[in-house]
Image (cartoon, rainbow, N blue to C red; front, side, top):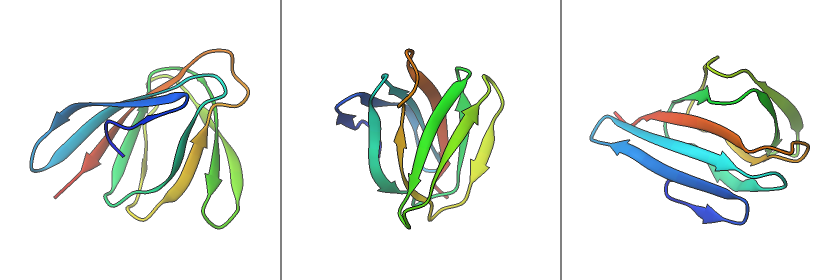
Amino acid sequence: MADAMTPGSRGDVQLEDDRFRVTRWTIEPGGAIPMHRHEHDYVVVPLVTGTMHVLQADGGEFAAELECGESYTRSAGAEHRIENRDGDADVVFVEVERLS
């Protein structure tokens, strides 16, 4: 989901080559990244401290607490929608996908 434009969210690809894709995501208050499936392992680097809500494809849901600069990783196959429901500030993070 790179360079996606949806109501309340934006993904800007900063770098892409044969090994990595780096995307800076911004989710405005009330905005969301639509349901999507990750085809590659990835790392998320939060640029803000805050909460985003994750709605999983199986109907599960949880609040993800972000801490600025505290990275985490997920495996390929993750499928979810990401929302900024509660905040009054943008949720911003960098996603680094390992393409090969």
